[in-house]
Length: 250
Image 1 (spheres, rainbow, N blue to C red):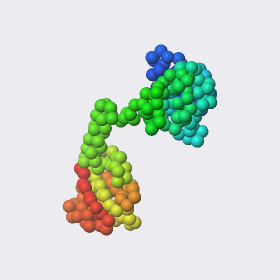
Image 2 (cartoon, rainbow, N blue to C red):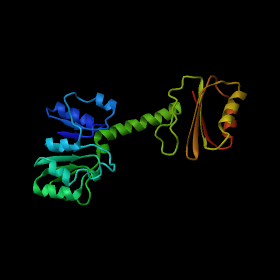
Image 3 (cartoon, rainbow, N blue to C red):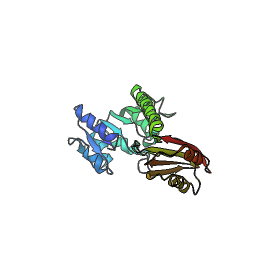
Image 4 (tube, rainbow, N blue to C red):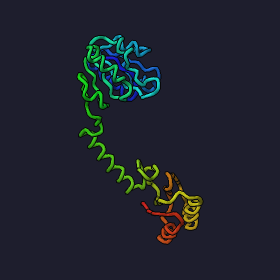
């Protein structure tokens, strides 16, 4: 097997192929140090894609779509490959030249082309195994997504943290260990933060930690406090210009 691109997908795939007893060649001139450290030592490194084309019975592509990689699997590439090669493309549709692929399939140069990026031409092409791009819709992925959503909602309700919101900025101060935490959702306008800190100073409450993040027209401020603010102070915060919501946690 030849693996072109040894990053987050290609690297683990190459390792898995080694465990299956395959002889694996890998090519990635831009591999990161971290990715290289995690590669099985039995993977045979090569410097060029052409070496992969010439040596391997199965070729799998895991590269980004760049000017250098667009239609990199073309007539010239197919001419270097073994007869009956199996080509896998789970990266980007346009890495493969469809016209050259059709010729290679009809001639027997390519035995099978397997991809989850079928287009109008390749979807009905003889020799193509086209599967839907639904890796995120497996049972395991759906379960993990549901768990993640519950954890993020719980994190917001219990700690006021916002993670992966569509409209609001990410703002995460972990678990509150102080006397109280105030979280303020407000419009992204000038002279807001100083008003919130002044309100706590008027209560003679020290702010032990603070985070402020913005996204478009909205902003989010978190204040960890060494004391518990009065109900009157919270009501005053709610009346500040631009404030949309105030919550006290703890």
